Image 1: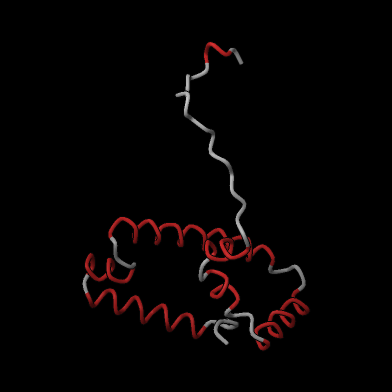
Image 2 (image 1 turned 60 degrees about the vertical axis):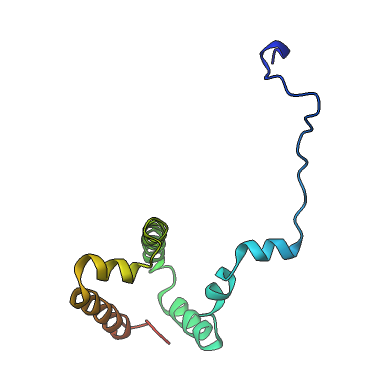
Length: 121
């Protein structure tokens, strides 16, 4: 690169140095994600995962790919909504559509989540 094209810097300018982060800063950035990610990996959950994997093999692997993509999209939309409105998803749903719709939606999600085979503990 030609030196004449470079942006001139003041004489007292020093390039910022990259500081190494310790293990404490690393886990501080990760926050509660580690705890919530590992919360469902109790011994009974691991046994269930092992049994399902042993019986179905790789037959349900396509479902994990689709579920992961859907999870990312929903989490991203919920995060953007929360940042924009400074409120959670349930509050915005109640404000936009009313209490009856929000309560019915929450009850439907709770019911479906508990009735599906393999969901819950």
